[in-house]
Amino acid sequence: MKKTELIQKSYEIAKERYAALGIDTEAALKRLQKIAISIHCWQADDVTGFENLNNVGGGGIQATGNYPGKARNIDEIRSDIEKVLTLIAGKHRLNLHETYGEFGDKVIDRDEVEPEHFTSWMQWAKEKDLKLDFNSTSFGHPKSGDLTLANPDKAIRDFWIEHTKRCRIISEEMGKFQNDPCIMNLWIHDGSKDLTVNRYKYRQILEQSLDEIFATEYKHMKDCLESKLFGIALESYTVGSHDFYLGYGAKKQKIVTLDTGHFHLSENVADKISSLLLFTPEIMLHVSRPIRWDSDHVVILNDDICELAKEIVRADALNRVNVGLDFFDASINRIGAYVIGIRATQKAFLQALLEPLAKLREYEGNGQYFERLALLEESKGLPWNAVWDYFCLINDIAVGEDYIAEVQQYEKSVTSKR
Image 1 (cartoon, rainbow, N blue to C red):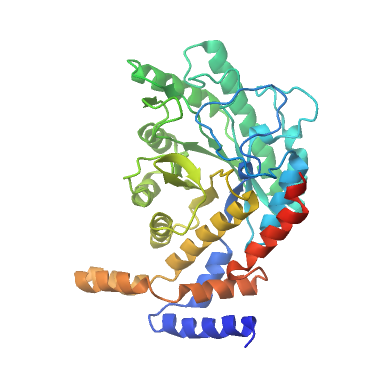
Image 2 (cartoon, rainbow, N blue to C red):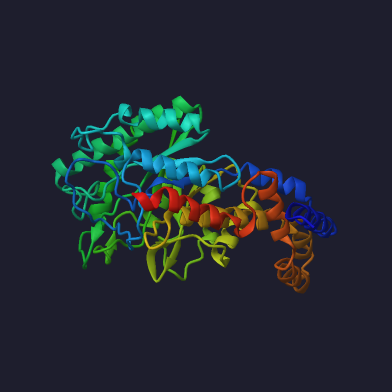
C-alpha cells in the first residue's frame, strides 16, 4: 500500500473513532487551517539584525551555539523563511524586530528609523502571502544599559521613547499596506542585577513613558506589552513585570503578551489565559520552551504547550489570542528548528480542537469528576496523529519525518555554502 493511501485509510479510521465521541475532524481541520502563527525572523540569524551602529550586546538576549550556516543578510533570511514555508501548512505571519530593517550602508540610529526601511519587507511579505508583525528593540545598543524607558536620565529615556514611537508608526504603515493590523510588541529589559530601593520610582517612570508613547492612536496596528521575570545580568528586579503590564494593560485596554519563557518554571502559563481574556481585549503569545531559565529552546510538543492550546480552545478564544514563536537555538540547524517549533505548535492546537469538550463539560456539570478525569486520560491516546498526517497530506507538505531530508538537502545546497 502506498504511503498516501495508508495516510488516507488511517485518517478515515481516526475520523470514525472521533465521531463516536461527537467530534467532527473535518471541522477541526478547517479551524486549524486558519490559525496563523507569527514566525520570528531572529531564529534565522541568532538575533543579529542589520544595523551599522557597532552595537554591543546585552539586555537579556543571548543566543547559544555556533551551528554553521546562519543567515548573514536580508536575502538569506528571506530564503530561509521561504524554505520553512514549504514545510508547514497554512498561511502565517512574520515577526520582525526593528533591527532587521533594510539600512544598506547608512548609519540609522534607532530614534531615526522610518517606514521606508521596511518597505522591501512589506513588498516581499505581500508576494509570499505573509502578514507582518513588529517589535521595538531596546537591547544591544550603547544606550541600552540597565534602564531604557524607565531611565531617570531624561535624554536616554527620550531616545527610547522616540524609538518606540517610530516603531508604532512603522507598524501602522505595515498594517495599512497589508490591510490587516500589525501587532507591535514592546519588551524592554529594564531592571537591576542586585537589590534596588527604587522599585516604585522606576515603574512610575515606565508608566509615564508608556503614556507618552501611546498618546497617538492608530487604526492599523495593535500594541502589546511583554513582561519578563528577569533578564541576563538583571536578575534581581524587572521593571516591566507581569503584574505591572497586567495592571497597565487592563487599565489602558492594551494587549498583554504572555511569553512562556518569561515566568517562573513552576507557574502554569495556561492558567493565565482565562484571566487575561476577562480584562484585556486580546492576548499575544510568544511560545518558547524554558529549561532552568528563559533559554529559548525550540518549541516541542510537551504538556505545557498542549495545555496552553487547550485553554485557548476551551475559552473559544482563537479569534482573541495571537500566536507567535520566540526562540533562538543556534546549536542545531536553524531551518529545522523553525519547522519543529511551528509543527509542534500546530499539533498542540490540533489536539485541543479534537478534545471531546462537550462530553467533558457534561461530566463536569453533573459533578461526575471520575468520568471527567477518565475521559481526559483516555483522550490522550486518541489517534490525533493520523489526523495530523492527513492535514499535512491535504496541504501538500512533507508528512511525518519526511521533512528531515528536505532540511538536509537545503543545508547541503544552501546554508553549508555560507
